[in-house]
Length: 249
Image 1: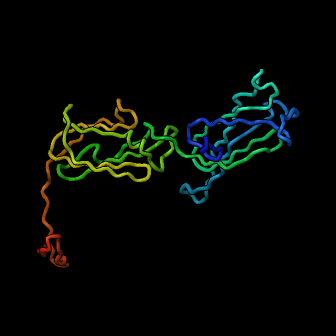
Image 2: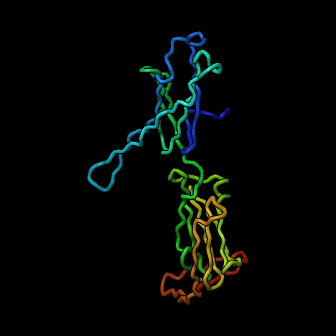
Image 3: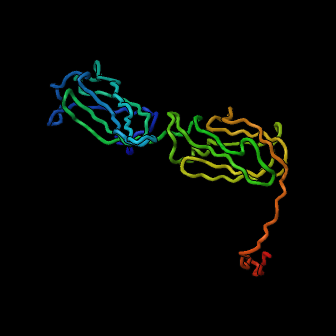
């Protein structure tokens, strides 16, 4: 609870808070109206952007109303001085919460809404999903998206642990050289197939049972390549760790 704050929220997660009605001396205020007189919203600012036309376009995410969860009933709240409200935000970005009693604003705060955890809505793209050449690096990229469709700006260690992939022929494992690069909200997997053939590639995102991608990669034999011939601009000699001069000519 030490880190709890109305100034931050996670997309798709419910937030709940309580309101205790007290007078200026800190006692229960009997003069307040019923719970329906309380109103609260979370509003997003208007955003302007260019959509390829000559004029800027403005848009605003819909406001989110605060929902009264509990209005203090029976002996638990005999004096009707405590109320609970909840709200769930989906759009990420900067927003502002307003909370009022009748027409009197009693509380306002900026709210920073961040994406939720990685979900199965994430996308998997790249040439490695269809074809490759033996001995030549190829790659696919997993772009993180939360359950509300928001792109992730970064991946947590738990997000990364929920990603996996498998390469095989039929149901037998196949050996490939893999390297993984994590940048912002995406993971790029670079693979090198050691021999030609048709390989099964399965990529799992969050769900360990059902693959997000289940495809066959056709790996062709290594292709011959012409040697590099320097007619001009010959590279300078360089020294390796063995201190032996290497002449590329």
